[in-house]
Length: 505
Figure: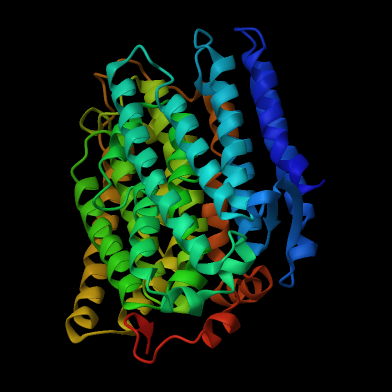
């Protein structure tokens, strides 16, 4: 399957979903699941072509007078994100079948859901900077429609408007930044931009374009000081939270940071802006998560914190830190999507997400409790789970950083405090909800009669457990062939000035 067909598939599915009858919940879910599954299989089949550093590229005439063509490009990094977008989309489609009420307008939900999937996929495989901005704004538009899906609720409307204003304004800054970047390089083609790192960093406009691009990326990934919109977006249906706010939309910002890492990183400005924003977000999000009484609120702030961890790693100007960042993007998508789905099941079965009212649920919904505890342990970084591996890499990078004395001393302390906070809020999610005396004053009494539904819709939790048993050596074997988005050898050969802040000692 060509990349253009792969890109059009979700949009075609969205149009079909929009015209189905109001009560066709099974058909809508089947359509969305099949579209995502077919896309996942097709992307998986492309692996041999990119396994050894290959790049699949398709180019179509667009605006030749301006030197712009419509370019689709898939390398190892784009392949990884495509698998996340489509793979998690498949499982969330199944989950939404059981979560959404028969009274909800499901055609509208699945139409927006598939359209967002197509926009996110277009962002990931775009080979042109202008295309990236176009699909970037499409994700903001469709996320606005999904967050405000229950538009009769004031909190949903408020959350949708806030997300649109913040990410939309960030997108305008990103557009200005990439216009300047294209002017500096002389082309908007991504391959040429990635190969022009030295030219970009040495240019007089670098201090201008860098903050503009970073504002766009940081606002999309809810990084300080733009972190406030994500908790309000929790008014969306839980399938939206599990998809947009753990694995796709909020990952767009860190995706862009990683995608442009070879071109923009390696400078003092990059280190202090990106790492500074990441460190502040890491601590602030983890601290706020500990005191949330709403399950989705806790997960929202923990998502902000983990995105801060990824941003901090990408700001360290270290190739191994970038490896750890990409690894944690994958890990976070697995355990956080499953935790959001578990929170939705708890809310659906008990009628509340208030942690103060929930306790002893392991006796009532044992399947959900077991899988949620595994995913929560991965979020906390328990050994043998995948979250442990990437967090250990994170701790190592903060110790071996080469920077000013106060930064070398502060970063390990920040990492340790944030790690402690992550254990605390993970324990709140598990110990307070699933253990203790069985809650008796719930709006509904959860039962295990939906065990089959729980097992099917929570199956995404299993990779968070099984992948953790793999060792660092396994990841090291997979890393060079995938080359997301740069090979380690390329990073080590990058001509950065000696002693650049953030480089590994």
